Structure formats: C-alpha cells, structure tokens
Image (cartoon, rainbow, N blue to C red; front, side):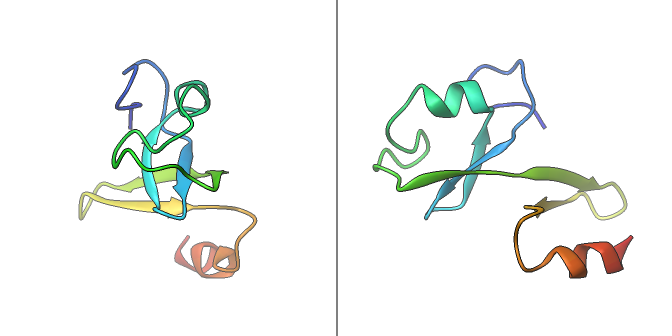
Length: 75
C-alpha cells in the first residue's frame, strides 16, 4: 500500500498514539504532527502491512509487539 502523502514508497510508519498508518518513513519524519488528524504525535512506530487478498483486509504487524505469536500462528 503506497504512502498517502508521496504515493511513491510503501507505508511503513504508524503514528502513536493514534494508530494512523498512512505514510512512508521519509514523509512521516517531515511532519511533527499526524498528517491525518493534524495533532502532535508522541512517537512513530515502524510497521509492516500485509494484505489478505481473500478478504481484502489489512493486517498491521509490528515485529516488536506482543501479538507477534498471533501473527505467526496465522501463517
């Protein structure tokens, strides 16, 4: 899924604490606020997006989070 700001790179950042995942790292770092809701963020979190083609659902994965085992079980 492409960055909603530059439309060149893949989305790889979620805005904490809002959870908005709309930007690549370069675009996310160019703002000191969430580009979706225009509110200052506390930090950025690197994510990996996987698309489930059967259901057209997006699964957001952060390999450092507690749900890693759940994501592995899905594979």
